[in-house]
Length: 107
Image 1 (tube, helix red, strand yellow):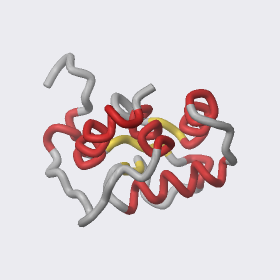
Image 2: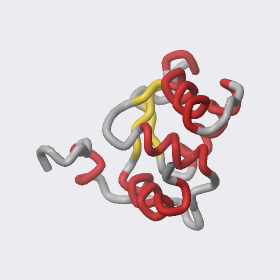
Image 3: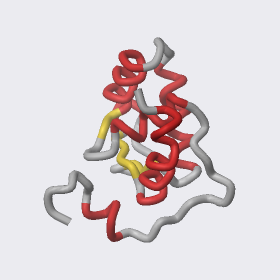
Image 4: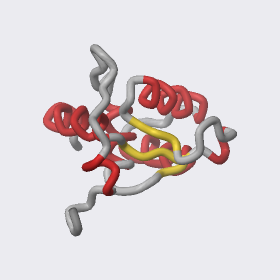
């Protein structure tokens, strides 16, 4: 759908949400928010979290991204890339979870 800010895969891929998967916290919501319209590297996600939430370690961001990927909310551009080369975007299930949690976590 042209002009609405979503990548075509968000709209056309089936929504696959791991059973019981929910938005864990504000940091997870912020990561999905950052990936709502394009791919983001771990460095970009780190800067977003530190700017809009609180300073965290890079390891914390890597762990959070891995968790969001495990539950089906994020996907990597290149599977199993080294941490310094990982780029993520929101999946259809991530979009649903992001929308559901917006009232709770939006700034």
